[in-house]
Image (tube, rainbow, N blue to C red):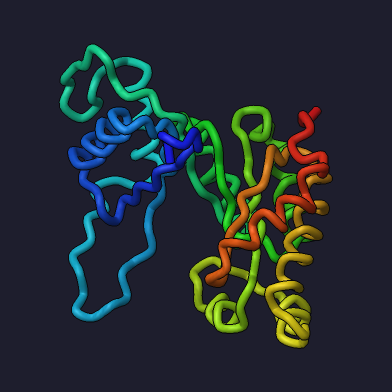
Length: 239
């Protein structure tokens, strides 16, 4: 992707990394021209047999380890120095619909303090609920500190739609589920809905952009979605 001029984002999870292996991944990204890292806690494995999970750190500490190395050239947990340390653009994730409402705000503040540069949200089906979350974000001044990218769903299959309620942190309103189920073509309706969500979300103060999240096998729909939202004024400066 980097060779094609695409700004790739590496996803690193605390579930799978020790501090040492995470530093190794940052170095590997640097060698391969990957300049963005999304630091995630990682969902617990649910398969059988159960696989050992690491969790040597949480997402905020993962962000801090990368930031410390980027800014000081020192591996925080060992004190070792580097002449040319990785300097990734650091991302984190947040679920705007976690309750009570102060919990995601507190967690977001932790990640900002740790040094996060951008934040991707869990997929947004409830725009009104997301608007309330962003009001709190702006009240706390967080939107001036980081770029917030809202997760916009692109649902292209009924099978994927059926799985959505079982994904941790996903809130699927009944009206949205019925609209997609009753559509003559789920993919066409999903693209239309993604455009609508992007336009609505683009009007919310504090939103810097959107993260299109595909639920279905049809990656070819992305140009169609983008064609409908490129003129949306997403990312107007929050005042």
